[in-house]
Amino acid sequence: MTPEEFRAAAHDLVDWIADRRAAVEARPVRPDLEPGDLVSSMPTSPPPGGDAAASVLADLESVVAPAVTEVQHPMHFGWFPSNASLSSILGDFASSGLASLGISWESSPALTEVETVVLDWLRQLTGLSHEWSGVIQDTASTACLVALLSARERATDHSQAGSGLVGFGKQLHVYTTAEAHSSVRKSALLAGFAADDIRHIDVDPWTRDMKADHLADAMAADVAAGGVPAAVVASLGSTGATAFDPLPEIVTIAAEYEAWVHVDAAMAGSAMLLPEQRELFSGVEHADSLSWNPHKWMGTILDLSVLYLRDPDHLIRVMSTNPSYLRSTSGGEATQYRDWGIPLGRRFRSLKLWYQLRIDGPEAIRARLRRDLDNAQWFAAEIASRPGWEVVAPVRLQTVCVRHTPSHIDATNSAGVSEHNLGWVRSLNQSGDAFLSPSLLDDVWMARVSIGVEATERHHLERLLELMEEHAG
Ligand SMILES: *Cc1c(COP(=O)(O)O)cnc(C)c1O
Image (cartoon, rainbow, N blue to C red):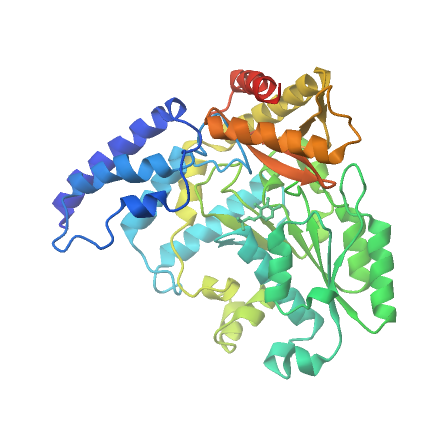
């Protein structure tokens, strides 16, 4: 493809994308498909001679796009807001257009230095002190793995450089709660912690926040048994019920044992942009690492997860492909982000944030987050006032957990309540009119209404209430 051919095809594609975004509301939220439907409608081998760009775009429109779940739809309330601000999509285009190679500072000085600048902007916008240095990771899952590898190496005094965990010889423990995201357990296992050594600390039955005194007891018991508390993964804004583990207490307890504290604020971290919400994140200054996803509620298109560290030199020592290189960094030389995570090659992801922060601006982003918080409070109050409906977890931010118990089902009949709630959520989701995530809370099904898609306004929530009454009735 020549640059001139590219120009023509790219203009067509951009027009198509803009039209599609403008008309998102006219489409069903979820495609009516069975697994494998798309595979069977596509050719089994590529065209031998290549196709015209126009014919590829036609198939994008008729074959691929109808099989997308429309998470930008204002009636999408499933999982979490996976916002993709158009400004950040421009940054994604720019990143692809520059086609730069991120394997070292030398291979693209701009790729490295824009990342440094933009992550420092975000640090300031979220009220973190100068003690923190940030790096972009693909996802919060990877950020957690990187943090736990760092924790393991700190707890074992860099065992990987010598006799490894076997040589270290003691049980290494990770502490979290059963409310933590599934990626926390996965990361712990991948980082070499044994399943039996992962401790799920009890939570408060209503808020689902970790009980700090139980953490202290568990650590003391493990130490008495000859083990080493290596890390705590604290959830600030858990996936199910938006639990906030008590970080001020956790950092104090962990400090006694020099255990690493990683804060998983993947979803809720966007709220740190709001000074009035920072109370929820207190204690964060004493953690070792913090990750959150601008690619969720804040609206930087996937994938852009940030990892902030208080001691990046430790991470570099764990991840460095060239240990002698460490000496050159402390002399104020080039940052090599390959040593701040697992992959060698990286994309110019920071342009997505750069575009979004420059074009939308922080105040507009903040106003949108505040709108969503207001909407969540309004929605929760509506639910609480309706017969048969209840809000089953605290509404800390923008997620409202709801359950319906019709008059013909006894509230103590958990199986009946579960079946009913799973039933109405499924039928609502299948209608394509709205989408919610069914979720288990204390082994009984409920629905998570995750508010915060860029296009969702109050009248969409009014419509959702009508649809919920209809499908649950
Ligand atoms: C979404 C989420 C994750 C996982 O995020 P990825 O970036 O998809 O890996 C982890 N923890 C919490 C609390 C989340 O909300």
